[in-house]
Length: 90
Image (cartoon, rainbow, N blue to C red; front, side, top):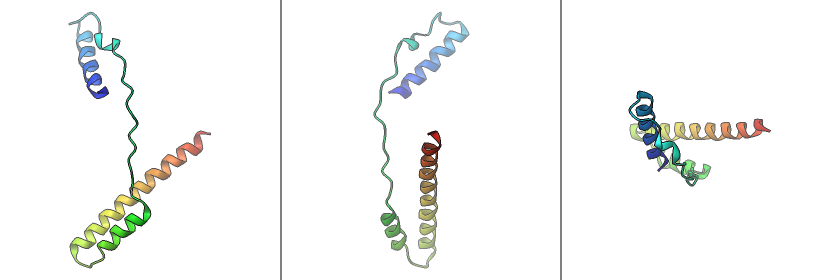
């Protein structure tokens, strides 16, 4: 819902800056509190099981292992970065 409000605010801001309207009515509408989205990530044992499922030496298995391994490295890096930011805030 907030994404729609953001679009309306941009449109009304544009028309206000262009002089088509005297005030921006979208500023009177407050942001809606949205629930925080929590993304469930794979556990280490689940990633190991996925890697084990593609244990063959054919092209598809090698490609799938590479994609899973690369994705997992990005997730671990993101989690470590978030933890680092929390530690350095204090």
